[in-house]
Length: 257
Image (cartoon, rainbow, N blue to C red):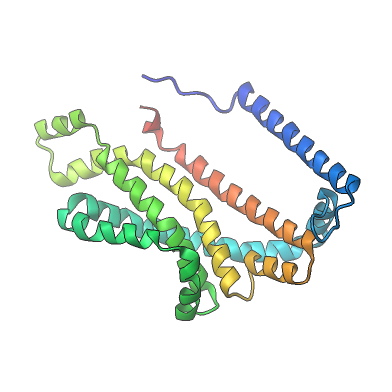
């Protein structure tokens, strides 16, 4: 059996420290360069100004961040909830594979940003339009990864189940679903940051709150430090949600087999 690398040992701590030092060096170069070349703050604020804005606007950023996170989670859960049955339908039905799958690929090819104004017209400026945008961005990766996982079921295990005369339902739940889980988790890790982008795009097009709306307001008032602070908050939100999926994925114990 392939040996699983322990990600919680001294190597992980060393990797974290190296990353932290590298990031600190980059921030230091940024701070010194802005001061050295006298770059205007409205063009590129120094990290110290962004940090100060983060502290001053922490309440506002948190409030808008929670709204965006709610939109992302609803859109992501909707993508997972619909993506799994759609993937199973395409996998088991040759008719769905000939009709539904090409339609999904075609829809995926449409630029989502172009759809955003129509989505806002259909669903309004409230929560629904942002959830739909997050769903549209996250749905395709979930379907494709789940479909790939179902198709990667080991042939020898299928023969083993046939030899045991397992029913189609037993084969599905006890063999195909476990075999598809690693790919499904990887698809969720791709889909989560995309759901964040979808929600932000929805807020850009039409919203009264959320981090996307805050970025627009800050940019319109030339408050570049607040713009960067909001962008940093979006990044932290996306990273946090990604690692939550990553941690949950570790419970899929058969990933290492």
